[in-house]
Each structure stands twice: as C-alpha cells, then as structure tokens.
Image (cartoon, rainbow, N blue to C red; front, side, top):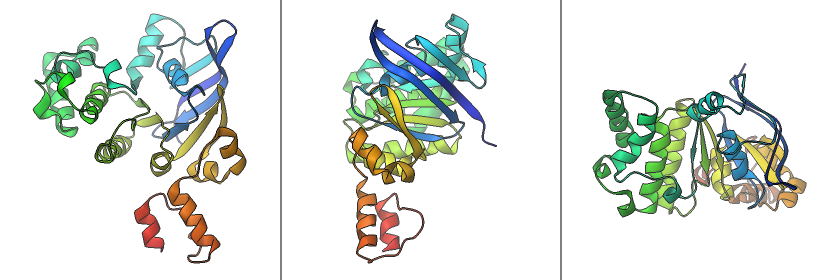
Length: 275
C-alpha cells in the first residue's frame, strides 16, 4: 500500500476578509507521486502551494504531513518547511546569495549542518545540476535557465521529501526544459514526491502520473493524465486544451490509421513507435 504523505482537509484561505481564494480544498497525496496542477491564472494554484509550505497560514481546515497534524506554531511550521521545499516561478524572488555557493549554502546553514556536510552537499548538487563552474559567480550574471537550476539546487540540497515547483518551465527555452525534465525524473527515481504547476499542457502530460485541476479556488478534477484529458466537459470548464500528442493519436485512431494500443502515448517518440 502506498504511503500517504500529505492530507489536506477543507482548506480555506483569504488574503482579505470576504475574498476567499481557497474554498475548501480536500486532497491526499502519496509518497513518490508526480503531480501536475493545472488551471488558469488566479485559480488558486500558487496560493495552495504557499499554504502547503507554511508561507501562508490557512484560515480553516487541516494539513497533515506524514500523519502529523500541522498546528500554527513555530515547531510545526518548521517541520512543514523542512519536509516540503518550494521552487518559485521567478528565480530572482528566491535567490539572495552574493555567489552561487553562498546561495546553495544558505538553507543548509539554517538547518544547522556542519561545514563538512554543507561542502559535501554543495559538491554533490553542483555536480548534478552542472553548476560547479559557477560556484564563485554572482547569480545575476547567470542566464534564466542557470538561475532556475540554482533555485532547484537550493531546495534539493536540503533533501526535503516533497518538492513543489511553481511554473518551472516558465521563460525556459527547449534545451533548459529538457534539462529540467531530466532533473525532475532523477528526483522521482529517488522517490521524491513532486508537485508542480504549469501552463504547458504537453509538459504536464509527458511528466505527471496524476493531475489536479484548479478553478476558482477549488479542485474540479483529480485523476490520471488520461482520465483528465479524456474528460471534455472538465477541459471546457477549466479552459484547457488536449496535449498535441493526445490529439494526433485520437485523430489517427479516428481515421483507422492505427489501432488502439491501450495506453495513450505521452511523447512523440512513443507515438512514432505506434505508427
């Protein structure tokens, strides 16, 4: 039986009285899941992430992490933040170090790790993310993709069980999206639980095992990639399109060019093999 790592019950949050942003979120997340969160701007995705990480304090409801109910006290919020890391959409909102090394070490110092442990972790993560040659470089000299990797390194170095990515492909070119996907797949192989929001439907379809669809502060869809993208009414309600590979596959089936292979192909390469 898969271990339930996060449970959210009736979660509500408002920035100001009378303007509810989250309207009673209920969701359970299992260890090691790869989840994409879809929805238009203003649907509540980022606000949900901020509540999960303890940056915002929910008004009503409950959050359980590994069975532990999170109360609004310093001890529980620190426990939440140690186990759930978040990589923000805009790297400039996350980076505070004067060099890449300083940036990668910041969170590790706050964890109270020894100098030796910090150096070992930075060595490992900088090698993994191809950042070693930039360790002495001020972050503002880096490209957008390089800054994004630094932000990922910030969080991964602290070794949280759950990592949230808010619009990780935003403003990245195709090369850096490919690098990002490799990083995410490596993290998944390490049994990390990954939750990400994106407007890139094709990326979400390739990557995620499960999709949550947000609309107006509520989850209106929760299922596998196939279940979500086969649900025409849901897609219309959430103003979402089908992934290109999915659309081509359905068209080929309709014209009887190919036979139903059972599993819908998620990538162009998979579709080519079917054809």
